[in-house]
Image (cartoon, rainbow, N blue to C red):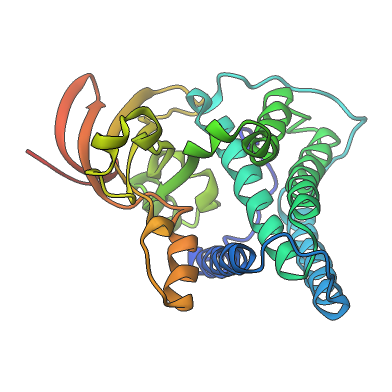
Length: 308
């Protein structure tokens, strides 16, 4: 849930710290996904690996909780309550919750698979981990006087964590995924200069969330053979000129997508790297509807693009 009201000051966390954690997590996920593909549906659990995963997870959750208690959750507490914010940031924050739960579930699944859990167990518990963490944050918000539990955020968390499960139940959904692109917006950078408290995950003007599709399942076998396996299509949603109430302009994108994990290579390192890259949408040619204008070019975020 985006922090929408005035709250007690919290320390500004350098973006490089978040970026380092993101990169490490996605690299581990890429490694886990590659390892799982090689190992198959193993039922042998490595107790040492599983214990290490539990210890690291517990330490990470504890560290994040301490930070959030000192930052977001400090101040007056009150009885649990709900606060509807369906329209905030033109729903881009809801996409952020979906992507967060989705990516966390996939990362957890990959790591659990690496420990030796069966593919089905890793899938289930991975989604449970992603959902539990996101809902824990939301529950804590519910006791704060300035936030409240957002039903929209909770539903978005459920959708994101459930999607990996749905992909296994309905294989056609494996042709779809979510990606993320980010570059600090001018407003965010200006806020940092004035020491205004911001966290880059709340910088929606610098963010595009993408729904990607592998088009091969729609093509005939003959035509599909002529389309590279790594080539996909992405539909992006973003917002611009957001005001203090979270209202602004919607932005729409339709671009090429790169499905890096489908690039054939014998290198385990590259497979790991490609698996991690598949969480992100990199600059790609396509079309955009920005500020009511149709544009053609190469797009990454609203502030990072080349248009004709």
